Length: 285
Image 1 (tube, rainbow, N blue to C red):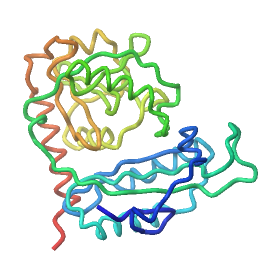
Image 2 (tube, rainbow, N blue to C red):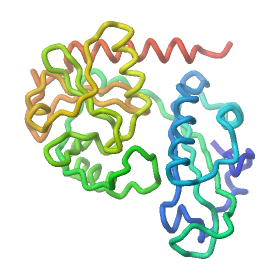
Image 3 (tube, rainbow, N blue to C red):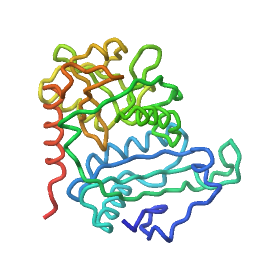
Image 4 (tube, rainbow, N blue to C red):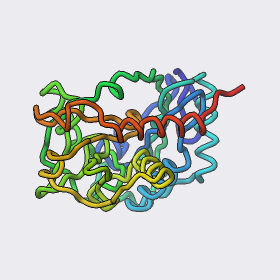
């Protein structure tokens, strides 16, 4: 994967350089997205790119490309690298300017980088489930913005790694928000409950796909905040995310979820999710 997008043009990675005074490097002043690629096709690209523009709007960052232009660029990047299964990481920073907390005056051009990474899908975790830990949610109050400021997420993820777990489930004032890099949902009495899309969580694209699947297939669901106690008493718990799709949780802080194995509704959602992938990302003939 030796070719990348740098400021809207596809170049060799060795020919692209980021300035040390880039505001993304010095302040985390920027936004990003990760888009999944199956069979050489982008999955839910428009949804990701529309969210990117919304994040940009929320931090007053002007993106000089339309969704269609960026989608065309990403398709070309996938083709140039011959990527079949993997991810595209893309980010915009506010640009290069002498270090100063306030926005550059006059404004400078944003810096845009995107690159491809091969990822082979492994069904193991979807079949066996994953273990998690609880972590206090110490992040800022605009988690709906997919910004480069991820230190709170990193500390939570490291807590999980240190405990030999896959993910950290975060809570704030007794309310479950989301994972360090995923959305969290529970199943109680046959109904799915997931935190509403407020400023306290990132409105995950896979979360949105999951909710559409529920609506289309008559699976009861509620976008409603739930407590730590509800999480620990749930029949099923699962994560959603770009790289994990729908992933069952079988343990939280050493306590088994339900019967300690992936539950029937989570398994059903995973199948429906894979059906969506196959429908949108058929192999290129």
